[in-house]
Amino acid sequence: MNEITHTNDVLQTYEFKDDYLTLFSEYYDAEPKTLESYIYALKCFRDYLLRKSITTPNRDTIREYRDDLQNKEYKPTTIHAYMNAIRRFFTFTEDLNLYPNIARNVRTPRIASDIHRKDALTINQARDLLNSFKRDTEESKRNYAIVLLGLVCGVRICEMARADIKDLANKGNYRVIYLHGKGHQEKDAFNKIPSYLDSAIRDYLSMRKPLSENEPLFSSVSDRNNGGRLTTRSISRIIKNALVKIGLDTERITPHSLRHFTATIIILLGGTLEETREVLRHANANTTLIYINENKRLSNDSELKIENALFNGAF
Image (cartoon, rainbow, N blue to C red; front, side, top):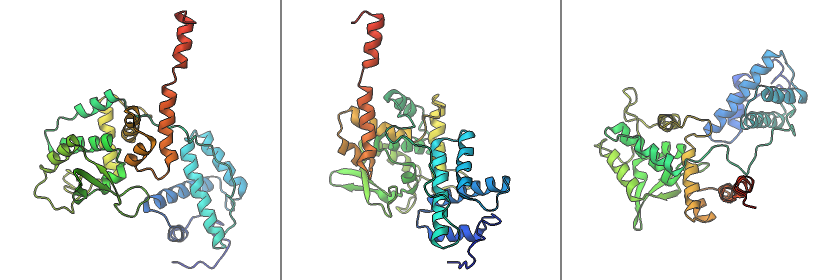
């Protein structure tokens, strides 16, 4: 780790020198993607300070930056993420006696934790999505398998990107896929693979022979990276393009909507909280409970009853 002995010039000229960002990355124990997002947020804050010619930021500076993001109509989730990175950075500078923690207890916009900001697909939308694939090429077979895996198992995009062929296995009388879940260090969880999904994956893999079990489950077909592992960005783009193709081009329908579909359908089919949590592999049951509460709210027909009273005399 780089040693920094001077104590007050971390932000004095506010260049956010690479040394400090590197030291922060080494100091803060987090996943690479998380650190990458923190560094991006810190650079955005640096740009703001440069525009404002601020060389010695203080607590008011942090609040003014937050208000600036709000005035520019950044989403609350984005503002929360940016402010979280700033708080962690100034905790780091204070811990190393480099600069006081001027971000402590600065309020950020409240993010509702009891609702989802993205919508689940309906059963008809999910069917339309699957039917949109011709499944006559390696690429279309791959994309179909990706979407079906997302719909049936609620597998996250990052888990799809990390999956290898060897993660497909038999467990008891079932076919399963082992997954490297969010926040986990290894592939220590699995989902069952029903017959239609199993056939779709086998059909896709049959186009890629000969294969090694150490190869990625989903690989690129591009000339530049043929056979290479698909990135999370590539998988997200594949799903998003398929959604747009069937007319679902809205901010509330995203690749994550496939995972929402999984949870919603489990509950509609009578699944319990624990059954839903097991499939989605939620660490916290409160995350799963959101789906239960949303379904309970949807089953409340009070608005329809009021409308019937107004227009149909049902009173």
